[in-house]
Length: 130
Image 1 (cartoon, rainbow, N blue to C red):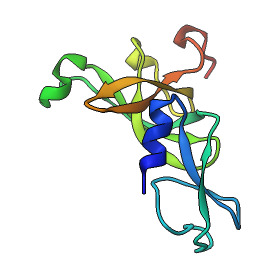
Image 2: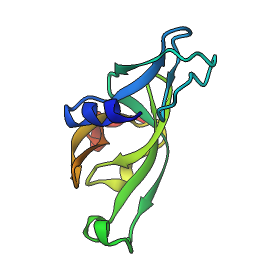
Image 3: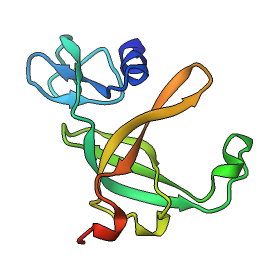
Image 4: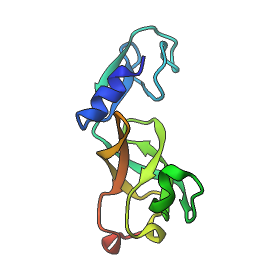
């Protein structure tokens, strides 16, 4: 069911499901529209932009896969299309991340066979006007 999502990520495109009946977008993939119950959900490319809805900074990681990566930001990003997804915000200035920060999808993180979408600030942190 999520093959289109991973194929999009490998191609550098963030894809979501959209209901052909009511037009709402959804994430994570499901066989039915979560807004109207229609079975006609299709995969569409998104613009890849959103804002940080909430976040936390991981300063010390005990997980072997990311031990050398700390500090890093784990965030819930609200996409322009509406859905929210859990991801990372990559920046050298983790203390400058804020709720409402505009971010853009980036696709250069590989783990095993998969390419994962992460997000980067749209504007350099020094230029942000909160």
